[in-house]
Picture 1 (cartoon, rainbow, N blue to C red):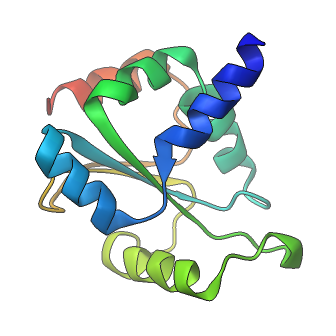
Picture 2 (cartoon, rainbow, N blue to C red; picture 1 turned 90 degrees about the vertical axis):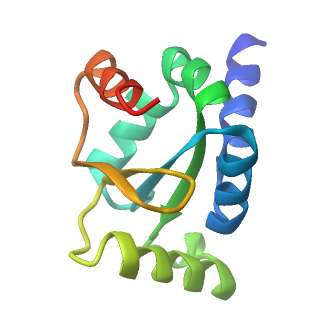
Length: 136
């Protein structure tokens, strides 16, 4: 039961609409964490999601400190996004990931200003969280 709750909680935490996240960040005085992912083809993306973003430590921190957005770019036909969502993700990539790096995680303030970027897999959860906390 705990595993199901943990999975359900993670599904609730990550959003896919940047404007909603930005509005929530302003109202709740939070930072925005934007993750560019290739959920069905990028090994480091899958590992980052599993090891870092789905960890109980990250989830607990994010619940009260971050608005989480995932801009996913799946390749398999069965995982393709709706056209409107793909357009939103493309716009985010154009603004925050013009070089097309995967995974790329970007910390933003509520105005959309980039505070920090992480390229690739983050092997140290404690270091990753400490770097985010510097901006709180």
